[in-house]
Length: 425
Image (cartoon, rainbow, N blue to C red; front, side):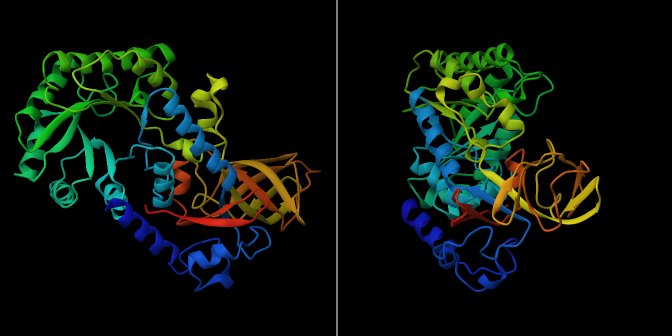
């Protein structure tokens, strides 16, 4: 059922008409279906695309998908990549095709998007106390026996609100107790005792089913390899304690989940130490930024820097903008800004300059600031930069790149656009 629903929904996306909603796309493509435009195999630089335009590398995207599939399998991990990164159903399905157990999400709206495109398993890495959302999820579970959703709980009050909203559902909602990453960290019960109280509250509610424990090691204060591993061992110890107390009795599978994009090597190492429990353990990794990677924050923090023998992710984004003003030898301006590029972790950097079909290095060119629709460049007096040049920008933080673009061209290394990725934020 889910597969058919997903295929039908993706086909509808391919049939969507190209129009003014989608920035950067060729004006003369107005009215074409997305599939028709993709079939034309236009060139990103000469095929009528307007600047600014964001592109994904076809080759690098496929490389990243395959690399994390291999990594998870090598370490005995199930993989539920965080879908909030892209909110792109076509990418969700490519991740599932590359062996993902399911998709992780953060909000009820994101769950609705995933379900509209037939995603069969969802890990909601957040507390859920919204009554309307809980009733909708209960209806989804009742309508589709193959659908599974797991969500966090971190308080007795939250558990009671969940149960009250669900009433008497056809199937209980699966819940994992979230262990906080430390005092003053984000969500999560603060210690083993508090986690036990939440677990007992879940067990007391027929509308809910306790299936495991989870958390997010990226919130460990002043995270370092030793402190992250120490917290992960607290998480696995909590799973063992719950199991010894009989809290997982009767389950076919126990869920233990962690893993953002900065510490999945530590997750793999510590989860391998997990002792046998009363049922097989679903060791669920949730890293999401890998799908596009980046050339800033995640390039610096990726675990593959620590384990280079396991491979390397490749930055798949490039934002192309044009020089629209060169008012002085020391200054130039591009027609892309905060509405087009991520800037919450770091500013974009200038990667390349393109003129007349050829590219050259951005020697003497530095991006110093963003306005809403302009990038400020500082230039050396002899910098080879002219009005009209296309400038390729390297970006940081995938989560705040994807959300600025509704339809993203996927281009091969030679510039041929072979596909388009639709996002839903």
